[in-house]
Image (cartoon, rainbow, N blue to C red; front, top):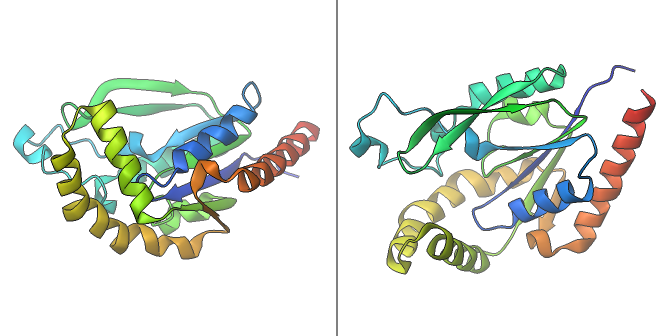
Length: 211
C-alpha cells in the first residue's frame, strides 16, 4: 500500500465553529504526525493593486482565494515534500513578504469557509466535514470576535454581515454542505462528533505507523 497523507477538510460559515473543531482535533494529537492548513493564508496577492482597491476586497467570495497555489502546496505535501506557506497581512490587504516553512505530516487538516466550493480541492480530501451552525449564533460569535480581537465597531460588523457575509454565505458557502461526508451541528460544542473524528484520526495514524 502506498504511503500517502490523509486530508481532512473542515468547512463552514464564518463563526460556525469550524476553527474550534479543527483546533480540538489537532490538540488531541499534538506531537503526532498531524498539521493544520488554513485557507485564510491563501488569499490572493494584491500587491499590484493600490490600497484603495485592496480595501474593497470581498474576503467571503471564492475569487478572493489563490486556490491554484493552495492545490499546488497540498500536492507537494501529499508527496511528503515541504512547502513555504504564504502569510496574509490584513493591515495592508495583501500577502506579506514572509513565508512559513511547513514540513509534511501523515494527517493534514484543511480548514476554511470555501474549501468545499472548488472541485479540485474536494478531490484531494479523504474526509469532508461541514460545521453547520444557526445564523444567529454565527453573527453573535463574529460580533464578539471582531469587536474584541480586531477593534471594530458593532455598526461596522453588522453592516458587513448584512451586505457581504450573509449573502456570500447563502450564495457560496451553504450550498457546499451537500459535498460533506459528515455535517457537524454547533461546531466545537459538539463533543460527540469531535470524539468520533478523534477515534477516526487515531485509527489513521495507527495504520500509517505500520506502513
